[in-house]
Length: 288
Image 1 (cartoon, rainbow, N blue to C red):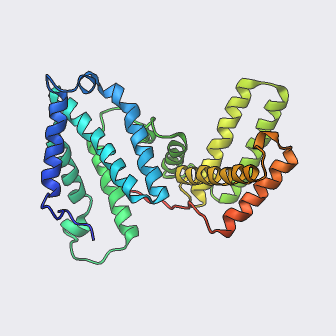
Image 2: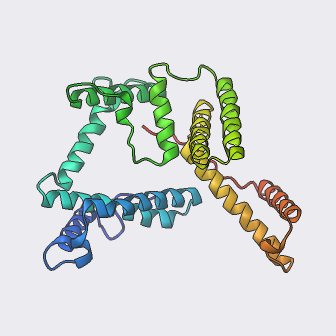
C-alpha cells in the first residue's frame, strides 16, 4: 500500500517543499529563460491540457501515467503561485492555508460541531453547497448579481451548460420532467433540419448550439455528467473505429477504399466485438 513516505524516507512534505524551491529557482534571475518569460495568460493553455491528460490517465486506469500527469498538474499550481508571489499577490503557503481552512469549514461533520455524528453522503453534499453559498454571499459585491455568475465561462462547453442548467433549476426554471426534454430535443432537431435545408449557415450554427444545450440538460435530468458522458462516448468511438481499421487492414485494404455499406458492416462488427469484450469507459462523476 502506498504511503506518504517512501522506503528512502522522503516525506510528502519535504518533496513538496523541494518542488516549491525548484519552481522558485526556475523563475529567479539566472534560472530557465522559458520559465521566466511565462505569464498567467501564457500558462493557461497548459493548465487545460494537463487537466485533460489527468482525466485521460484515469479513464485508461494507467496509474504510472496518472502519477506523472498529477505532477504536471501540480506544476501549474506551483507556477501560478510563484508568479503571484513575485507580484505580491499571494504565496503557495497562502494557497494551501486557504485550502486547509476551506476543507475544515466545509466538513463540520468531521472537524466541527457535528464531529462524530453519523451523516449520509447526501447530507454532506447538502452542507457543502450551503456553506459554499454562504461563503459566496459574504464575498459578493454590492449591487445586482446573477446566480449564473458563479459558473465559470471558461469551462468546457458541456460542463458549463450542465452547471448553468443546474443553477437555473435552483429557482425552478427547469423542465419539470425528463419527458419534456425529449420533446424539446425533437423540436430543436427539427429546427436545425429546417435551417440546414434553407442553407442558412448562421442559423444552422445557432440551432446546432440549441440542440447541444438541450442534449446536455437531458443528460443532467438522466443523472449523467454530460462532460464525462461525452468523453466516454469519444473514447468508445476511438476504440471501435480502431477496430474497424484493424479489421480492414487484415483484409488487405483501407477504410477509404470501402463502400458506405462495407463501412457500416465493419462498424457493426466493431460494436459487436467491443460489446462482447465488455469494454466500457463508463464513469460516474460526483464532485463537490
